[in-house]
Amino acid sequence: MNDLGPRPSSGRPRVLALANQKGGVGKTTTAINLGTALAAIGEKVLIIDLDPQGNASTGLGVDRKSRRASTYDVLCGDIGLGAAMQATAVPNLFIAPSTLDLLGVELEIASEKDRVQRLKKAVDELEHDQRCNDLTYILIDCPPSLSLITINAMTASDAVLVPLQCEFFALEGLSQLLKTVEQVRAGLNPRLIIQGVVLTMYDPRNNLSGQVMADVRDFLGDKVYETVIPRNVRVSEAPSYGKPALLYDLRCAGSQAYLKLASEVIRRERSLRAAA
Image: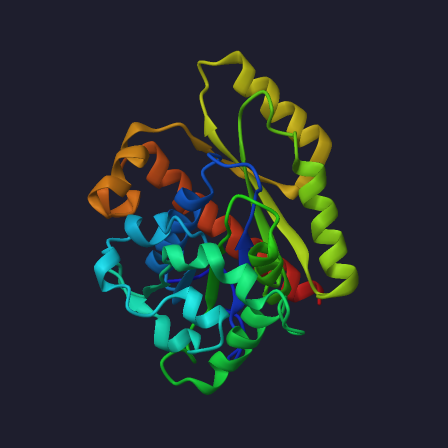
């Protein structure tokens, strides 16, 4: 039961883009497990897989052969998000899967006037699709690049959630991501904000992890979530079984951290709505 404040109003769900142009920072892992955690506490969640590798889809048990409709078809304008949406093994958690076709979508839509608004249009149309009208959150798993696909995600989103690995080069490239968010807000989507930065793969035995965490908090202040995602073997194993960590091993430290993160995300959303 969600006791963390009112859900988003009926109609358009809250849309969060998980973005970082650096690969291997736990972006897809965060999308899968945050989505699962939100669903577990009463939200109805759709994950939009916009990474051509399709790891979010695989990690939620969606076999490649079953991806007859995908986000490629959505961005091309052939189908709506509702038609691409598939149920997962997690109650109230759905996914619009990705296929390798996404590798070529930027070239296909590059000359179109609405090329940066394809996903926004698809999200806006959800309110007319009865299969989707009670969704409360949409999480967009972006590719590890600041590409046209990522710009589409930011244009369609209310906020950006940034997974940041606790490693030496953690802040490298972050300024460019923040600059891109500002550019999208200025030219395409004035409501876009940074919802928060989540530190991932934290190892308390590693002094460097602690130093990176301190540096990031000094740099970004309260934009950094209190919740830190630890480096955890069970979380790493879960995708090979086609399961989120919360189904694979609910009691592991990683799963418990994602439950805490989900609660923190909802609390921030409640504060944002109260301040609006």
